[in-house]
Image (cartoon, rainbow, N blue to C red; front, side, top):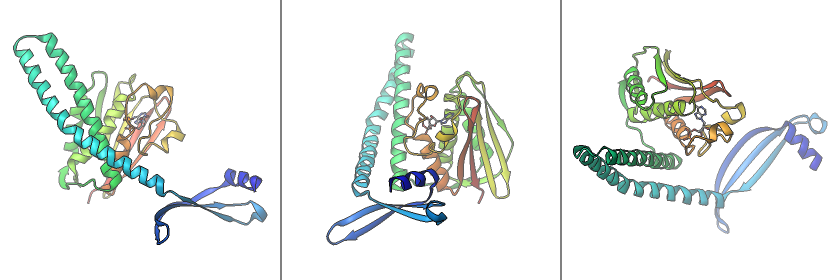
Length: 287
Ligand code: ADP
């Protein structure tokens, strides 16, 4: 059995991984994870199907409690943080009026940290909404070119080192949630800035094909190895290597972006080479 399993693992193909909920009077509600693998060319070249079944009821409940906690905590923390932010802005104005530049600088730094805290809490809240399937969209029609111009202009203010260039002048009407699509573009651009500290150029391309619009964001930064690329859109995933670990983050931005794009019926994917740079693509249906 041991030997068989070893060559099974060398050649296997995962056919399917699926969760099944069921209820029995004696055991109550249970969730099972079923995993089917097709094993080719083991005994007598007969294909073999291996079925594994795992009871993940407890694991699902822990996940549910964790999501609930994250949702409540990030929601409840947002209100006091928003008022502290307002007070720091009032303080900053007072210091500036009193020509106390040193104090105004300290308060400006507090304000920047509060903005960072707010965006972390928003990420946590969005991720829990996505996980629970309650992230709602407000669909309107807008020119996709205007959205790209607005966001690029906004993101350009966050960096002195990089030059964000737009290629392609596609004026197509997109039916989507403008706020959420801005969030996706901002997230991909802030990653491009963050993970290309030595490079200067970031390219944003817009192309239209029959019924589809494709947006790409290319940087010439630290890149991502092929084996890590497969996990990029998973919740809390961060690349663990010396080049990436110096940058802060929760590993939620791409998970949220992928969720938003999928909810619009679109596709998101990545092409990257370690040390040479990364391109993220988002394609969306025009209708
Ligand atoms: P984070 O907040 O950690 O950046 P993301 O979900 O946005 O979370 O990204 C997940 C991980 O993918 C990052 O931690 C980083 O390791 C990697 N990554 C994302 N974008 C890039 C990029 N443009 N270049 C290199 N690595 C990237």
